[in-house]
Length: 110
Image (cartoon, rainbow, N blue to C red):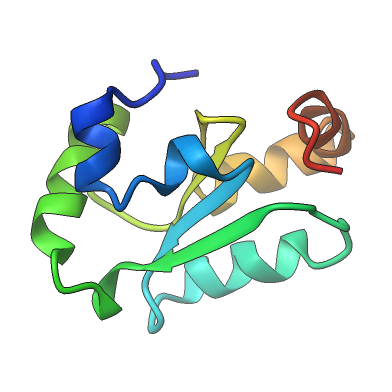
C-alpha cells in the first residue's frame, strides 16, 4: 500500500481519494479501466467515485500527482479507504484470492 494523499495532493487529484471510500481514476477509452469497473459491479459499494481523467480540466496535474503517489502513469488506479490498491490486474488478483470483499469491508465500503 502507498501513503495516503496529503492535503495538497488531495486537492490536485480533485480531493476524492480522501473523501470517498472507493475511487477509480480512469479514462473513458481505456479497456483496462472498463474491465476494472465491471469487476466491481457485483459489490454493493456504498461510496464509489469514478474520476474519468480524460474528462477533467486539470488532467495533467492530476496524473502527475497520481504518478508521484503510486509510481504509475497508467490507468486505472484504484484506491480503497484512501490507500492505493493497484490497477485492473492487481485488483483481479486480489479478487481471485478472495480478498477483495474483505478489503472493501475493512474500509467500510460494503
